[in-house]
Amino acid sequence: MTDVETLPEEIAVQALKAKAERSERSWRINSWTGEFRDPAMERAYLEKNQLSIARQMRGALAVWAGLVLVFLLADLEALIGSASFWSSAAIRFGVVAVLVFFSWQIKRKPMLATQARWISLLEVMGMTCFLAVYVFRPEVAHWAFTLTLIMLVTTFVYIPNRIPAILGVTTYMGVSTVIMLYHVDSLAPSQIVGISIVTLMPIGLGWGTAARTQILQRRQFALWQQAQEVNATLSREIEERARLQAALVQQATTDALTGLNNRRQYESLFQYELNRSLRTGQPLTLCIIDLDHFKQINDTWGHSTGDEVLKRVGQLCRDSFRATDILGRLGGEEFVALLPETDLSAALLVAQRFVDKLAASTISEEVPQLRVTATVGVAQLGDERRLDLLLQRADKALYAGKNAGRNQVVAG
Image (cartoon, rainbow, N blue to C red; front, side, top):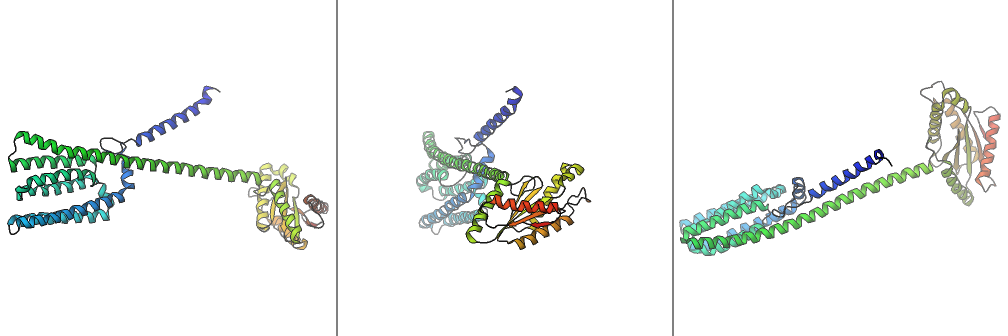
């Protein structure tokens, strides 16, 4: 094989390799953020999972709102009757109202739950309001710090958001908490360092847990996406195989020029109808159709016109005979029609109608003056047990019609 001949094959192989590399790149996941490196693939993941993410987000918001109201009871006992209580209550009810509104919006537009800017803004708002505890109730600052550590972990684990955005929010919360504790307790530098380290621990733990979870979720999506692509490829291949099989069956059973049954196919169908006729006693009639002076058409107008004539005659056969009749091309300018459950007299009428219709038809648009006629030999199944014997009788009738002047139907 020459280099020129192998070039297309090499190009095809290179194209397949390039496609595989692009596909491999699209599945890559950033181990730090837990997201696909390919932005298009990340968008596809979010769109596919937007409903489940929205459900998770609305559940987290419901728990969040419930906890905000529950801790109002603690404020009620400690601050009842003071201005601080009403300020705390106003903040809590304001937070709950925002959470309920955002949950309602997510129900209407699930993709909101996948947009980090809105979720992060909501988290910053909630955490800022939580910092008010250090102002209104400084005596519970250490208890609030413990709760803050829990919040830092749950922000990573339970509230769906992008890891870079969560890191920003939790860093803000951690730094703000250290600042509030410093002002409340006048911490020494060593204490600030210790509290900062303790604050970083849940952030690191939450980061690792969230990254692992998001990576696993995206790997699952990648496997699903790959399975979808494989299934689509298999479906296309199955459809292509079915199309090729249908084309092969068409080629094996159909005459390419006229679209009628070829000899192999109509002989098989003829044998079936012969056996059925012998079994049921129903009549069976055979017609052999031969175009008159077809050689002169080829010699005068050319083979392309001759082919057009054969095509139009094949279509005329389909239009003139019943759907249950078996039509085929014997070869050359000869056609055959087998009429099940039809006696000789009825078959003669059908054949005559075909002959008359053919003689009156404009066969070729390019040669409108061309008129084509046909002679038909008709024979009904008698004592024969073989189709070739029935064909011989019909063929004798055909030649009798040829000798009698053509353009007619003759019974055999």
